[in-house]
Image (cartoon, rainbow, N blue to C red):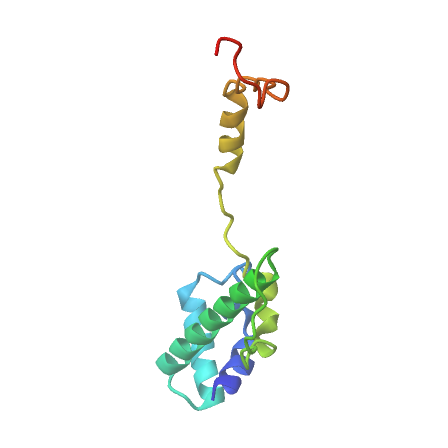
Length: 133
């Protein structure tokens, strides 16, 4: 059933392409969902829920895959999700949200701190007793 829904939705970009002019137009998307329902033989609300679940799972798996590639990440022995290949047509339309880091601010603050005092050279006097004793 899931593969039928994926194929039916794939032919209707207004249902998944966020750059499509009609992507946010509910009145244009409703007939498209009805056609998906007719093509698959599954109720419209079930098609919508299944598609949302498939899309969300695909994005979750994609995030996991990107985490595996990060530097220093341990190698994982995870399996690929069965629909990852079929849903690869979504890649151009789903991008991770930009993140903001305060690391640049921390480095700038460290530059503003005074330098630590230099350490005294004790290599010559090490191991010698004071003359007063």
